[in-house]
Length: 381
Image (tube, rainbow, N blue to C red; front, side):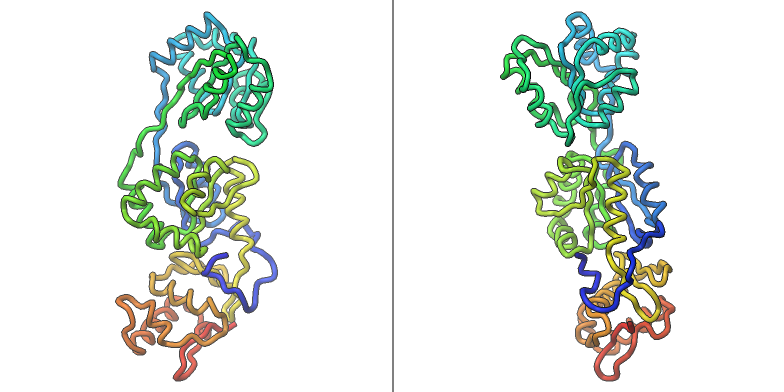
């Protein structure tokens, strides 16, 4: 659980379910595709979003190699077609249309077995007026391989639509079983369109200006982490996540694999969908009980607090002071402890009193931060 939330003291009895569970939160969205949809899902629940796509989608609609392979498949149709991603399948059909082969491709696909790597791929197949014969329950390439190897592949032809990360061993498994694998690269992932925005996003996440970081692909995790590591802030970011001050969310277990390798825990939705991802994040925050104070329910974010449904932006110093006071609700926090979070280190009791006075003025909640003469300060419950 987050170190921003106290472990003892009075609590709100019911989780926040009014659609504003993310009030005061800043969410970093690293996806390129469908980012507007994901941002909208978070914003409708009170969050502010920052969009910094780590990778860009490069379609292969005019790629001569893709068109050549498509023509060859039309002349010598496969027995099985493996569809790994919705965007990749749509890209293949669009490329065929661009080359005047769209109708012939759909006719060919209607006569072969189609194996899909999950519901999104199934949806793309259905939207083209076709049907999938089988779909991987957990949307993994290993399930696809296991399904294919349940059948005799000797002499059979299998066309594999690659996703951005490659074929994940599907081609190799087919060939090892005596089959003929034909790979199709229908799109590629390119570098970030705005590298400065990505660098700034890693800096903000490590420096405490981001509450939630969302990833929708393992390749995006790797690319974002490389920028983070190059800045020298990877350890700082990991410490925030481990302490619960920053939440990391991944759309599925494959996406989360590189995060696990870096020792970063991630929230995973029940289904690998953007809507499910947003719901998982919202539920994570809704399940966090608020601290019930004399001024109302209190929740501390990375750059603000939510007090009695008011989102109040605070300075980094103000946030650190609130963290210390909320860590032991109702307990007196000494001036010496509060001095430690002031800019430049301990600067005496007067500096603490001035900082607390400014915090009180910003909060505009009389009586919330109580002075205990000669001892320090405490939050009033």
